[in-house]
Length: 111
Length: 111
Image (cartoon, rainbow over all chains, first blue to last red; front, side, top):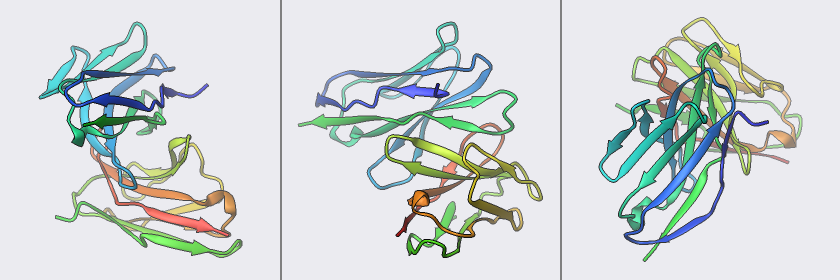
């Protein structure tokens, strides 16, 4: 079983739409959570950390549900520039400094 | 401030050839990582170095060696390249429990 699982999509949404991605993780001892964004043929870039209480950054909202072991990313008022692959990243307690990546969810925002 | 730099950007090797991928960071981060990214597999950790002078295996270390030359530099060596090592290789650095910054990647093809 993979440590981190994401629906690969693709998600194709019109501009202005709201879209949400979920990511599940298998290890209940997981400690830190992040969403990264990766554009085609580029390196991943940190989008936002995910805190237990949930957190927002502009149009982006991240939430953590420890009981069900998933994190989510909500994007409101989608822009064409949001088109990318979104990677869920989890750090496991006791795994040194290892981070586990989901395979990514592909989003295309359509004009 | 260049962040994380990697060389080369592209490389084609024949089976059995060796090469070293170079990575350097100028953010004074303690931890550095090497990942490979394959379609449908996400990013997988090859080796990491939690601090200067230490290295540890990640999820897929077979066929690779690493050297943490100093705090800035972390190199990845393929002693005898195999077609299964065709991939995109990313170096990253971080502080504390943040995954941090990625380099632009090296696209390696082994024929």
